[in-house]
Image (cartoon, rainbow, N blue to C red; front, side):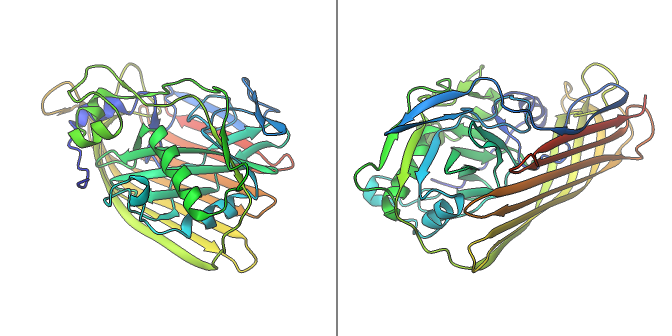
Length: 408
């Protein structure tokens, strides 16, 4: 498959970001809209459980869990859980097994082309949450990708919930001139992961895998037409979508089941460090994400956002991750309905700052995320700042807070 290059109208991309099924990875000015004043949820501990837990049989036992991921502890579904791991299934074990493989999957019917011939590595992505009944809340300190942050990748998040691990796998693409990814397939990612676990040799020989009963909606989510209509035909074929352009969101294929993998073997965890460091030049029109004075407001956002991630595997088996995003942006209020969009206000500045940290052992996972968005100057009509803190860990250490401060 040739390198994906989407060319989307700026106004359409802004509208697309407001729709469901977008995956938010280091969104430089994402947040919650608010009209004036100060809104906050300060140091709020995670609730005991989200609504809608399911129980699924697993050979001689059963597992109870929330069949979705979230972005906080509010119980608002983000992605469907489509992976469950039991046995020797700590996230570090799964990571080592997948990263030990080469990119040759031709024996299983995948082409020798990107991203199907790529190898696994640590991925940059938002911290998400998941829940297991006997454990509580867990965070996605381990994320892996097969492909690339730009333009297309298979992306996995893993959540350690005691003696087993939940996960979500999907195929997503980078929306051009943003730090946003759009999920375009669930099933294909699950299939590729299944093949790679078979190749790794870590599956139990007698009971390697089994599907759960239906646990979440199928299909799940949709691809906005503004994005779908910019996809090349071969990518539309790959994800099972219509060949022609559309006017409504295209359902994202899912069967509603999760696959349970029974891991018996282990792969060697090689000590070492890896770094990713690159710049995304943000250049799009988006809805004003917070401190909205009233009605619909749009901003033309320009400027570099530097993304850096450091991952270290220690000789003792501990995995440590750190991520930092920093952007200095120019914001211009515009009317997106004109062609080209017309400036309707003076350009001003904004700083975006985001940190993620994670520590992973075979027993526990701790992860945290901090987001700060500051409009400069922060005073003036409908100006302000957004701050979000998320900490996820065992023993009552999971907390979430959000504060939005706006000038009236």
